[in-house]
View 1 (cartoon, rainbow, N blue to C red):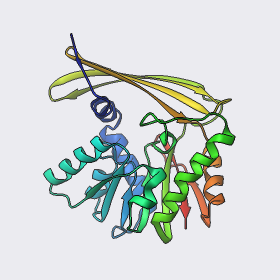
View 2 (spheres, helix red, strand yellow):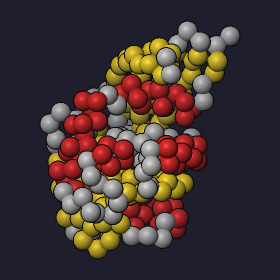
View 3 (cartoon, rainbow, N blue to C red):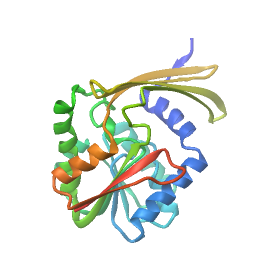
Length: 254
């Protein structure tokens, strides 16, 4: 019988397969272009396995903090930062509660790698259907970001370029190594734009181990996200479509 991998283990394997050097370099360079000032106090609200925090740090953005809604990820991130001698604090906080969990204010908040749309579904929360039910959920997270960023600060949200109503599904596969073990990862996603919900299945398997999870995300377009950022108070919102990245960047100025 194969070892059953935990959810964090499955995502670490799958995420590392996705986040190859080219992906990380292109994405972090796009963020560096947006952020510009390397002295900015930055909060990465989707810490996960460390992307893009590690990459921004290597580019000279060293005034960094991280949050994640998964306590296991937070613990592992803090251990990784300490091991690398990086002075970065990792905190546990769902985005819906960010303003009550984090007392500091930041010059910039980043939420990238297509994480935002999993605001409820990543940790198994209820994901209501229909735009009329999804908008309040989106606005709740955006309001928390707005509260935690300083006046004249910016919020950068990455949204997949495939988040368009003509896109109905995808199947992808990756191969990677982890501690000398070869893994094959498959992604299957089904998009229901009538309900505005995506269902994403990730399977990871090696000769000795296997794991699987199913996550749900909301389906919104970059224009709709920009509209919601304006609606909750951002004075200016821009959409940047960087070359050689899988995400568009929706950027709000407080």
